Image 1 (cartoon, rainbow, N blue to C red):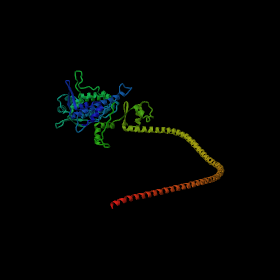
Image 2: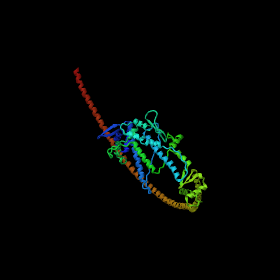
Image 3: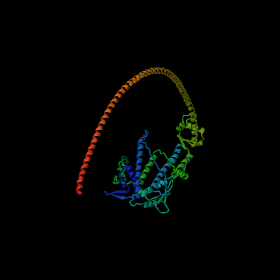
Image 4: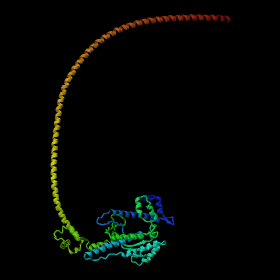
Length: 558
């Protein structure tokens, strides 16, 4: 299973995740000092989840209202408060259960109060002011309310059956049929089943009794209360700190747990008492279509909602009676421009004289403290008032606009003079800058011309000086060249003489060397000849010895 939703819930409530999962899926009961855990089925687990959600929403809503009431300051009253009742209206689904029954019963009570507030009090005000009034019949739903909240009514039977351990939805339905079947507002189905019906102000609604007793006994168990009290969030702890457990001791022992129907009935009774002492404002919300789509208006659905909410009777009252009622002092204060021509200090006489002269008698009635007007007459008076005030406003606007225009003209004239002075200063400055720039240009060219002349003269002087220096350098170089030429010739002659001596010395040395070489070669030739002669002599001696050796051998052989 996906644990992400329950993890987020545990995080937001600041409670232990395991404890939250255990409380949502198990019923924890304590008997004789022992704790028993019994698993819940899917519907019971869903009911536990919804009970936590509704409890947190309920206590959070109460906390917000208390905070608002604590901040309201009203110096004229010892106590002031604000209450907000947000309820959609009658609900009639394909299957209507215990929740729809409570919501529709609350709507019946609120509709009864609305009827008394709008119709009964409206007629009473006319009678107190002495205005003729034709009574209008309106649908009274007191019988339907009596069916639900009387002794042995529907709520009483549901609550009684919820307290019996063996009570079931079927036994409850049988008691409902037996006790209320004769009522004109109770609908007993022709076919036996699990349904019963009620003729509500808004129409007939059939309720399915399956789960009535379980939901009436309440699913906000003590273990769920303890879970929220153990929250680590200080805010959550403060919300549920004062919530009592069903097992807490009362005056004579353990108190009985209050059923949802009894709590709802007490809360509704307290609400009606508060409304009876308060100044209520009704905001009727009309649903244009059942599909929740934009720009889709279903006429029949809207007409039914207007009829069920009593708006049709309100329209009848506005058309047949005098919907506009003002105190005489308020009328004089609002329509004073119309009453300026009537000179009387009594507000009632002033109003009556003006309306007698300027309005038909059927369009208004003078009461004791208030003037009663038709809506059409009020529109005419408003148009006349707007016309007179418009004329006066135009006159005031004319003078104010004239004064503003004169002031703006003087201011603009001063601004124009300032702008002109600035523009003139700008033009003169521009002309000065142009003249200055032209003067600088002329000065630049003149200075340039003079500078060029000076440079030319300086250049001519420099060139003459350079030419003289060059001529002197040329003459010095020429003299030096001649000297160098003379020195070069003398050096050449000395070098030639020295070279001649060196050549003669080299020639003598060469001849000496040549003679020495010839002498050496001759000695070598003589030595070689001697060697050759020696070798020839030795060869001849060896040849002679060899011959001498060969002759004895030949003789021996012969």
